[in-house]
Image (cartoon, rainbow over all chains, first blue to last red; front, top):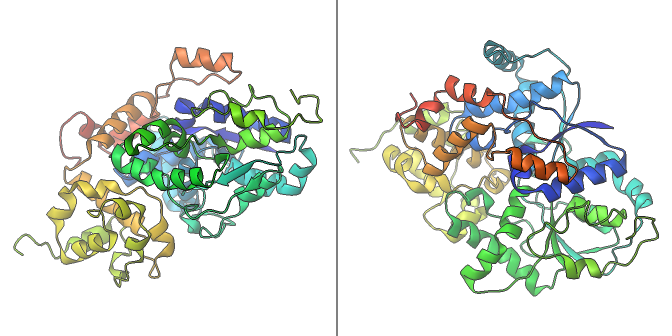
Length: 300
Length: 165
């Protein structure tokens, strides 16, 4: 299984731990990640400002993957929705695609027509292309005893109409299943579907913090061991900004925030350093000490 | 009422994303689903749709609150009429930019994108760190983003020349 790994801006700028864990888990799953030099921003930040610029930016990345004849594996949920939306639009409107190709060619961007490609989030690939049953056979360390809260975020699920095989955004299950296959428990909680707030972080920190707060409060009250997510935006909100949210509302959460590949990586027996677990902002030390040694040689 | 622009809703409907605005029958599920509205009453999707349909062009395009949408798509997925309010907001913001109104945060982001092709500058120092962590190096931008900003006129907004059109 080969994919062009699409990191996007936020993973490269702020989430090396996520990138490390994803690459380590992909390797363990037999997924080959190809790095395409031409990948740049997905276009998401431009959508609010100029739709044409958004489309062209997303399309340029898709064209780069088409030329390499390889599907895209995204790590960021916002990138996933941008690239999926534009990819779907181009599949349904070939004339618009041809126009964008010729516009980009006029800018000396090399393009050779290839087959249409798919765009898929890494976690979705783990759930659908690798599959829970196969992952179960690879688990070396049982994470039983840990209680995790799945945070799906928005763009992994929505808008549902752009995604092939979309989950019901009101009742998502893929991340819960992927967590449970490690032996850990998943928590059912009221604020599960709530947006993290990072979408407005650049516009108003106060507003963004207020949106993030109810989830942190509820999970802290429920004594969850960690929030598990798969979008660097959501992690910037819950992990990087958790201290600031605590200060603003004079509350204490102490809620570790893990990327799903970090959780799966632990269950696969991959060492903590390769999973970037020391780079998470809210300390993960106490949590990690509660995981039993694995049967595997990498059990550390 | 003198400031009302009756064709405003048609202008929104003509922008990508705004096509379905006239389907709204004002049930308010967008407002009930909105995480922003829950915190800040000034951002109220149903009210924004009403203002657009009434033709309150200036009030809508000039206001700060149009930049508050977190693009969570909860309204879009729950709307029984297929209005796609998140996309309507994209249309509103695109039109606002054309009329010369842009939130400074977006202006800043465009400038950064033009320079680095990304929202972050991955420089030599970052690449050294990446190498130490076993991650592949990230190359410099090929300049495509700057060209796209030129084609679409966005570069003029960043340079402070004002209106995009």
